[in-house]
Image 1 (cartoon, helix red, strand yellow):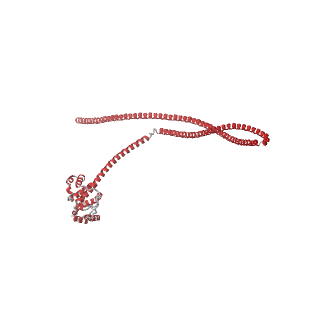
Image 2 (image 1 turned 90 degrees about the vertical axis):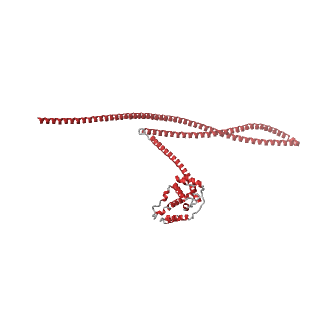
Image 3 (image 1 turned 180 degrees about the vertical axis):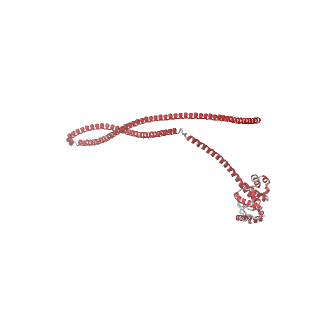
Amino acid sequence: MRSVLLAAVVSGTDVRGAESLNSLVLAAAGGGVTMENTFPVYKVDAIVQFFRTDVLTGQEAKHFAKSDITPNPKPEVIQRLYMRILQLLYGFRPECHYLAPLSENIQCPMLYECAIPVMSVYLSMCQFLPMCHVYDFSLNDLLNPKPKRTITILSGIQNFLHFRKQRLEIIAGHQQSFRAEMDKLQAYTRGIKEAEKKIEKLMIIPPEQQAEAKELAAALKEVNSATMQESQEVSAINEQVAECKTEIAERSQKLSQRKLEVATQKDEIAKLKSQIVESPEEVKNEMEKMKENIKNIKNSKELSDEMLVDLQIKVQCASQGESDIQVILKQLHDLQASMCKTNQQKEEVQSLAALSETLQKELKGLSNEEGQLKRALAMKLDKESKQQIRRQKKKELKDQHVQNIIGQYDKIHEKREEIVDRIKHINSETRQFKEKMQKLRDTCNQNSEKAQAIYDRLLTTLEQYHKRIENIVMEGTADMMKMKTVF
């Protein structure tokens, strides 16, 4: 059988067929490369049950049994099973495997009847099985299948069919969700189109109201522009008021600082004045003491002059006078030091007085600035009050203008409603008139039909009358002719 197949295929004229046959011969010779399985190998009972339920149908499913695979696989059953698998996957019916290609000029086609289905199944399985990770399929697996080899191939196909079933379920779920989403999208698009149509209808102003709408739009634009200008003016005034407030706060801070400095300087001046007041009294007392001392010195000098003669005599008295003179010199030195201190204190008092005068001048200047600021604030407040009054008047005028516009709009709306009512009344009258016209037309048609019927009847009666007259005339002429013949 194998030699017949090879001879039949080699006798073909197609080059591609020859190339494929070379590979087929190599595969038939057992030259395929063996590879490790990347899928689970199922038991024979599981394989039989799966192919009965998911691949085969009818009598084929009933007759397919474990004995068809083990211990001796039946080539015809396995070839038929492969055909059903290809039909399930690609829709390629088993009858199509028995058809020879029409483009080939084959001599003695009867010889190819056995080889054509086997080769067709083999070529299709060689294209399909690499997707199942079976890369070493050969003609021997179709013509002389072995149990282990067929179990591995069928388990690979079963694994692929399980994967295909899962993917089909996932795709079916995606399709259902896609259909639902498409339905939603169509509904949303319809709603959007309807909404757009409604918006277009609402946006279209009737020709009767276009002039009114233009006037109202122009009035609204004027009101908006006026309100925008007023808001800008108000914002500018608020910014100026905020700047004035900040300036007033800074000036108040400066005033408070200057007041604190003046208070501290006043305290220092008071202290210095107290010191100055106390020091002249002490100086006076010391001066009086010094005057008394001077007087005493003068007296002592006079006594010393008087006693010089005695001192010459009395050395002891001279030594005592020298000691007294030294004491007086010490007191004079003390007086000079105290006078220097008083001079320094006077200079300090004068400098402090100059500082107090400058501070008073600064206080006067600050008070003048404060008065000027208060006056400026009062002027600004007056201006703001006047501007507020003007704004209030403008607002009132605008409100009155807006109310007038609204009143005019209400009047126009009332007129429009009246016109609409008139139009409705006219439409109803026209409808009634049309109905009356239709009724009159119907009555006219009926009367015309009746008149036509009467006219037809009259014509028929006149024709009958004329016929009768003609008959009577004919009878009269006949009688006259008879009478003439008689007479």
